Length: 263
Image 1: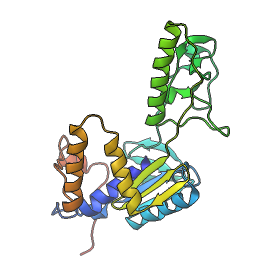
Image 2: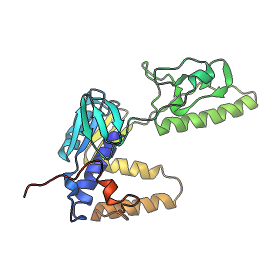
Image 3: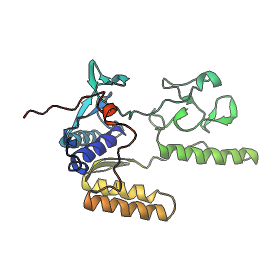
Image 4: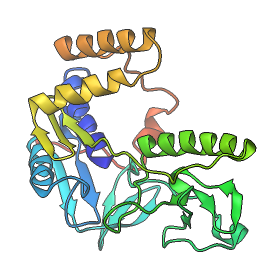
């Protein structure tokens, strides 16, 4: 999410890289997080959203809620009516779905997602399925299944079984999404967690977030390697490699000139 990205950049600039440069001070980096909705992390309870905003602000992130990004150029981004010069604009608001509405000639929501049947098939085409970001799947309380990786994995597994059942003449029950909860990391020792009503914040949520990600890694070597790398970074605040390549100094400073400090 944009929250996790903003927190990671703030930690990188103000902690990890703070002593690595002689001519610039990474702590001077201005980090702005723009949210078009009324609060951050709308899928979380409101108290966790408030904690998230305060945590980001405490590590130097400017948070702007209720302000949508209306334009992005090579020179920066426009938030509301204000244009902010920047050489680095990072998009964290999701992806555009494929143009399936015209191809399928079926109803779609305002985001272009196809409204599928309970077995994730296209209406009128029982052997054609749409899953993931391209699917509008009804959920509970009038909501739709969120466009996140765990949901897409469940849909893929379901459709695979559904195809086998069709080939063997078996019936399949409707797709049922199982939502494990929401996790988001903000920075070192800062995270929020909402697991079906169980809410955590701060240090404990941060550790839970890390362990959860390691648990879902595939294989045996990957979790062990990631755990060692994370522990090294945690204890010494050091990364394996921090290389800036592919752009000369003139181009790097052409968009936004370096700040002038008073002497």
